[in-house]
Image (cartoon, rainbow, N blue to C red):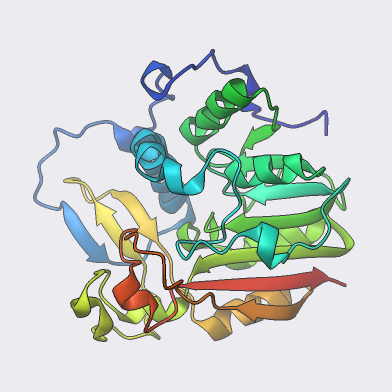
Length: 300
């Protein structure tokens, strides 16, 4: 693990969110004084380069707000699979992690990796966003922990073949990448035979409903089968935020084509005592339709 590239561990000391240095500015983050005639939301095709650029810029720009808003729910060393609060400590979807090398993809501030570190695992946390990984270092400094971090695209993992025992992502990368199949192939490549790949993402059925936590979010308004990306764009028509949809069947085929065996598909129910609203996830919707899908796969 000593050859990790783009390691964010050399970022400056960061005792608090407001003290973090600014990440390098991406080209899509500049020029916000452009005309706003093309700004807004669109459904259109987005190439890989534009999608990756938008994802990196959006998360760098919004990491501070995200961690401030959701930090209490996520914790500093807690592993939850989604807004329903399903905890890996109870779910055990990764199995025994003690002594195992574990890759977290789309790690954000590496809260899940930190939880696994406490259970004896040897995690590496990877994220596209420099700013998110700076938050990981901030939390490490506060707790005396040291989670190795790497800034990289999940579709081009900077690791050798067969170096990890386990890999996972909790809502990272797949929803934001146009190349889910490529991510699956890359994860398969870096896993050892018998390794487990577990990933959670927005349940595909949610694509057909408005992203509204109230009653309006329970009425179908969009085709589940339409996989045209959701795009937020600036006044120049450049994507600033992109989400990619795949149907449940498409995800299963990505898993199988990469060489994995699907052993479980978990759809967490909304807990009766959970009242928190997280964007479009809420008690109102969560009790009626699934919000998260968790795929449990094995590399044979």
